[in-house]
Image 1 (tube, helix red, strand yellow):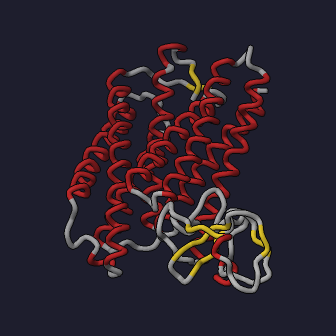
Image 2: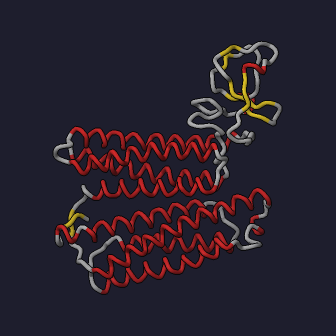
Image 3: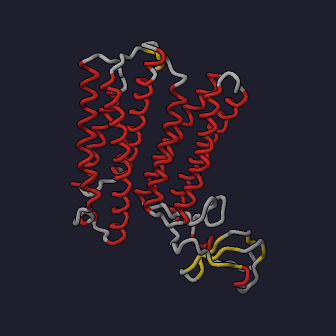
Length: 344
């Protein structure tokens, strides 16, 4: 049971990070509204590839919920299943009123669709390992509880995705959506952690406490980063010249930049402390590589007008940093329970 359980937890963690990558790419390309409805896309399970597919057609079978673009101004939704006549009967349709976004871009549509598809696929291993844990509840009660919480969290995350689309990408809801993804990452990392090999780590209260602070700072940075990203999205709609996006630097960016100094400083001190005292936290080196890449992409975006891919890398690596920090923290917290013979 344990082997199968942990295979699916690792797979789920990989897929969730793929969802984060896909979501970051969606934001970078401005494809967040590529599908104006949820969970379908323009009322289709397989989204349209060309505009003609969402224009009215006479003598065509329409399904309830299917959308068409009407006069380039509105999205209309079929009230029920029907077959259209030669002349369009507006009584069969109602205006889609959850938002007023009516642009069809096939590239954006398919980028958003692939993002949703990866999200749906990521739920499959979570469902499987949850079922496995329930079947062995007497032996692995705590794993069953965490598994069920993870499954519920994935369902809630899907609902949050719907609210983000319905709100036409409201900044606050995007931030909550991101935080929920990190919560799911923490749950999965814990489940993965329970099944990996053991090694020795020395207990050090200062290291553990500083690590908690570092995780808290990383979380703040990610929250501020989503707000900066919202500012960039707004600027991109106003001005197509990337060089002018930061002509007036917002206060939230100043906070983001200031916190980055604190994040880098505390993580490098953790690296120094781990090496000097030989604490045995081997993943701290991985953390430094991720942190260095994060700083480089941040500099590139600000000083070199957002080179392609830097926004996606910046967000994904921030989430990876958070995940590695949490994994190291789990190692250090379990020292008290099991001594030096802990899982790493």
